[in-house]
Amino acid sequence: MREPNAPPAGNRPRIDVREALGLAAACAKRGELEAAITHLKEVLGAAPDHEIANGMLGGIYAELKMPERATACYERVLATNPRNVLARFQLGLLQLNGGRPQEALDTLRPNLSDNTEFLAHFYSGLALLDLRKPAEARALLQQAAQRMPPDHQLYPQLQGLLRN
Image (tube, rainbow, N blue to C red; front, side, top):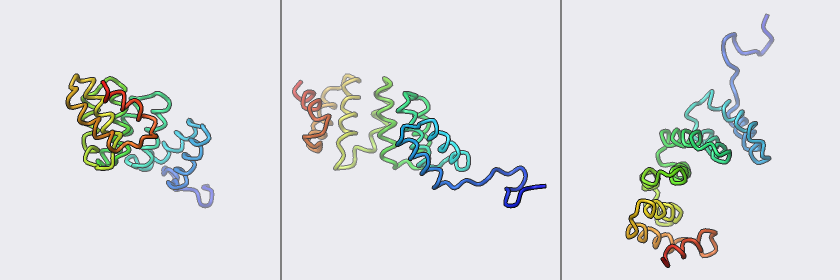
């Protein structure tokens, strides 16, 4: 005999996606990353293409130094929403740090059209330096310098790159 209010036999219980995301965020904030992953996987079990859950999971995997898993999450976000600027930026950064500057450049390219943006310009410039294209790198780094606040932590590095 089934319990009252139990889900039908063979069906998974429905999860409250908002609640699971909130729990995941709270766990992550407390540094309980494994618990956060568990909640995010619950969401993704019910909705595999959930943009926020995939993005959060990508961020946790990146923090845990698991770039392959983080990359897969950010790629799922971009498959769902190619205009997700944050996922595009995070994926590009993973690619650049992983020694794949051309992939990073290709990934970050759509973010360069934002006239207020400076980080994609900065990291695209670094990718171009890795690709031994200093003139193209300088152009992007100069654009980054026009937009980056002088009190930004990367500003001294940017200025150093422009002096060389």
